[in-house]
Amino acid sequence: MKCSHIALFVTLALLLINVPVSESVTCNPMQLSSCASAILASAPPTSACCTKLKEQKPCLCQYLKNPNLKKYINNGNAKRVSRACSTPFPNC
Image (cartoon, rainbow, N blue to C red; front, side):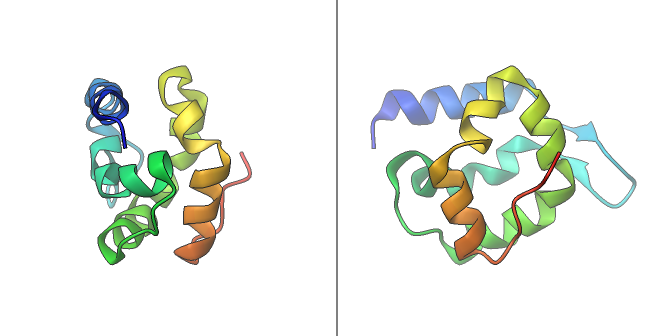
């Protein structure tokens, strides 16, 4: 995986830290950093990735609406990770 992709993902995620959705979930795209290699390099998702993906599921539609994050959330690898983690991809 290219370091520039990871750096870009982290930088974009930092822009959206702590965007609240409800009292029980704090939207924080940095929480999905454990999924970066699975999304960017087609690696299998880790258990940490799946756990965070399930936690951040209520936030995914919000991330899809953000042009800086949309390309990471709405792509084939992200959908593959979603399936592998048994977390349905959102219909926003």
